[in-house]
Amino acid sequence: MKGGRAIYIVGPCAAESREQVMETAKAISSLRFEAGDFKFIFRAGVWKPRTNPRTFQGAGAQALEWLADVKRTYGMAIATEVATPEHVAAALETGVDYLWIGARSSATPIVVQSLADSICDLRLKIGDLKGLLIKNPVNADAALWLGNIERLEKTGVPVMAVHRGCNHQPCWAMAHKVRLARPDIPMLLDPSHLSGDAQRVPELLEKIAELGLDGAMVEVHCDPEHALSDSEQQISPDELNAALRQLNAARGCSVNAASQQCIAAEPQLNWLRAEIDELDEQLWDTIAARMDVSRRIGEWKKAHGVAPLQPERYQTIVESLKLKVERLGLSPAFAMQIWDLIHEESLKQQ
Ligand code: PEP
Ligand code: MN
Image (cartoon, rainbow, N blue to C red; front, side):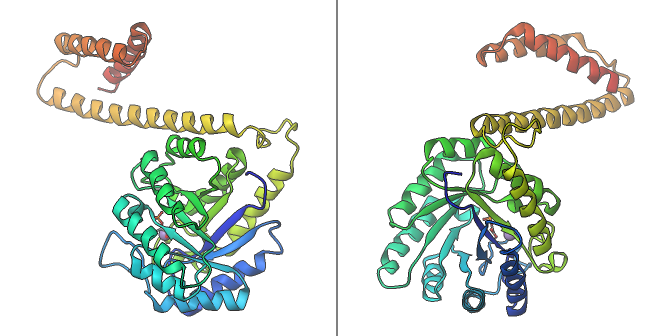
């Protein structure tokens, strides 16, 4: 965090009814005094970009009035997702303070440009837009995310990046590239879409302190179990309170303390560790998937009376492995050691 208060954009995945929106907002606004130094902006999606057309698609423009009610009643700034120039016009007319551009729109530069153009056209006439949030694209493309930031900056409205991962994987390398290229742009973490799992939200929020991020966008619902969208990743206002208290306590601890939790002073190292931990996880996932295929090959060989070890096949793989690792700048001896271990285990599995 580069000074200033952390920004927390919290609220349901989707505005479902006036009651659900108001009940969630009431609970969140009362947390302000318990959870400590957190500034809450209330979020809710009104037009939902859902994969399946037979599921809840959002309550539409009527729900903007419910958000306006939150602003009037609880004094929180309000945020919603826009995907078309018509969404931008309707949101600005209702006094929405922050607009976010979702991961699917972020994957399409023509969409982002049309949104930026409509903001430029409308902003002269309507309201006071406080900020534009751009999620990373659904594919792990740092250059595209950076290009979108640049397109939105032309509007003159302050821009923030939101890191929401890809396919429930963090893609820390992508976020790190953007952080290094644009340290001047606040970056928020979206642990809800990043993990797709409510249980993992508290542990991911700790990354804010570790990586020196500027806050978070978190899906919070008054009744997560019965949410009409993303129910498995939304947390309750009480769970948000507990996670933020924990975060406050961790932030307050001395950086010299022996505790491994107190590593907030080393964001540069922590970014690299986040990258390497994710790569290690992918390595093990790949090894486990490889063993699974290996077992299936073993079954086929048994059924067809073929010996587990085929020397010509082994030789072909070793030759192509040597060429491959040389191209990658790795030592062939090191690669052979690892390969022999994997192969040995594979034969055991067969
Ligand atoms: C959302 O925040 O509700 C949303 C749809 O997010 P994303 O675009 O990251 O999937
Ligand atoms: Mn959602």
